[in-house]
Image (cartoon, rainbow, N blue to C red):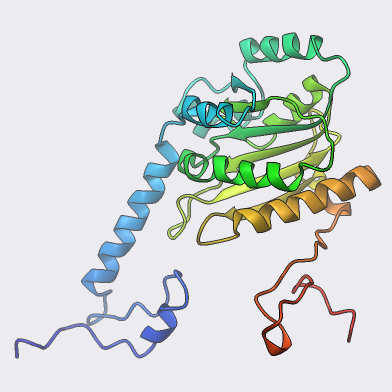
Length: 274
């Protein structure tokens, strides 16, 4: 009697070992087992904490300075977190002080830049704290031979994706990429998103951007994300466009092919050999 439990044995338990998704949770009568219910509440609390966690750009600025990268610390027009969550439009523009600071810097570099990298907290500062520095290191390594002129890395408090358009326009940058914390899910409170735009200017819609999402240790690796982003940037420079007209056809190394040898190709596209 001591070994009995009111929870019905879950015959799909092996499937749960293959995914963090909430499937095959089992049941206790007509309800979830206590363990599954507590796991859900814990994941929900993690997601809420990620949304409200304060961004610490000074720590990231120190990490980047140790690698010789200059940074600019700016703020969106959203004054605090509550306003940021209630007024998405304010997170898409800089406040007046930040705009002036950016214009002063741009005046000393009238030739502009090839690339401006922006980092914003978005809806998960946790994603930035965990993944921004190691991803940027991998990106620097992979684009070292391209010879692009790089603007100081811009760190934005209370920023949304479109704030990179204003930053790129003010800096006269040909391209921008913004690293931003994505909306937390119940299994991924620290997912990092990358949004790339060629020819940034205020007023662009999402149709002008390319997105690479779920950059984290349990998702898309730093190296693979950097590889895909570099493909988009090189193709954008060649074709002078981005967004819906620029497809991600980057060749990727898969785990193994015939005989265990690595293969190349995008698994989403049909093979040219067939």
